[in-house]
Image (tube, rainbow, N blue to C red):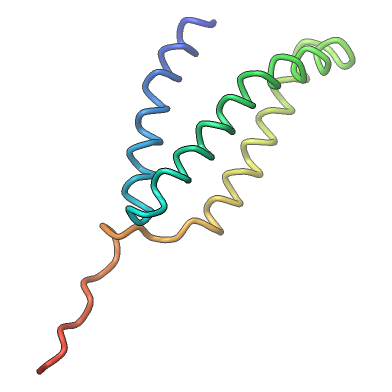
Length: 97
């Protein structure tokens, strides 16, 4: 089970970084990539601890249900808050001068 997770993470993180660089200004890129990396590191440290505690308290399927529900909430928030990136915005009208 960990081999597919490792492969998926190895593909996912560079893709996320690429999307971030396309959605923020050049000035914001470093800070946003740093925040993304910090959240990824925190998730890698905390998820096994939280998942293990949920597993012990509620059974083998509970962590999957918990993380699935959390991902659904985060997806809903992302769809609400993420705006179109520069490559998706229509070109600005040219002023007649």
